[in-house]
Length: 550
Image (cartoon, rainbow, N blue to C red):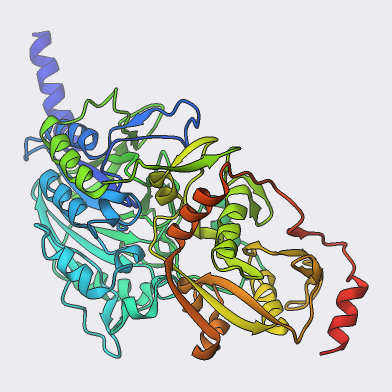
């Protein structure tokens, strides 16, 4: 009798509260070619744990998929862009190795990130042509039109668990500021907010139950502070970069879940917008983890009733430690075969680091940045060298240095270029990068002190070039990268330099760094007086005198 009463109570409870469906949402972002196993030096430089890459990811993804019965539980696997440029296996193959892996593991979709365009549109189209699943973006159009380019779709509708799920892709408009002009020739990136609003209405009108956005735009490092600054602060900052993920989640209605990327910062639980209640998810980069959120959905109302996290300690981020997720043998073997071809010669020792060359530093100066800019200056015997702050992607530990380590520091195929300009132009370059919201440059060949209390474009208080006082009309030999010469990082002024004043050396920045290690090992460096912020600094008499000669 008691069993019968209990049975009736359970049936009544199910009828009252409805059945809960479970949808496993698995996602990756900013993989940057990290499908190979590698040591996580960012976790422990001296004794890095091994991350299993794509083979360990396959083990975890397949374990989740085994829980699906397609009736009460199912899954999706999405990628949020920047799939290949970074690790040699991705960069050398121009993404083909990563695409093959994504096909093997059966992703449901991806979205173009800004680095997908590093080798140009035609190269990307060839890579994407090998995919067995769709590429989504609702805001990449042919230049001068509103027509979506032919290598993406704005959205798809997937049926799972009796639900119609609409998924819209969107790509950061910052791509225009971060890519070579020639690499995005003929295409444009429409503002994300109106593009999403347009396509959300279209997809909602098709009768979807849930709507997801897969976006290559990210959650800021401190989402609450960023949210408060944007929506609670009376002081409104001038917008330079495009919308981020939490801004779109707040301002665009109708999004249930937003998969974010572009900013290499993972969060253990979703950011939930306090007004729209959109959930925003983002993992770390370089294939170090698989994101996983278990979505609870009310079967009757077909709405989200809650979510579960797969781990108490790591939340929705599953770190792919190789000894925890034993690599899938079949996929691991295939990745290793591709890796051997792509990395031929990578382990050649080319020099030695006499100290740890790290990205730790003060203001805009760090030790590895000093080495890179010294290498540029040394390669062509220049007076002054500079690069953007975000161009250096790894540290080099003390000891023997291989070409692989150089590649990790500089995974992009930037070329060094020389420009012959007067002192006024040189000073304007520096002033541009310390004015307004900008944070400076990595530099060599100079001693700079500046104050943020001074007016924009007049913040330098001390300026020496080659140890000598700067002169406004003297011609200086400067070396930088073709990436910056294209006007990126806010340096649009560089696009106006006549070709007659430009020297294109045909040498990659990566090769210049390698040459520096070959010729100057053991390489040592330290934080020095080349770059310093001092808001109480007064302009030196030498600089005042030189400025009076303008």
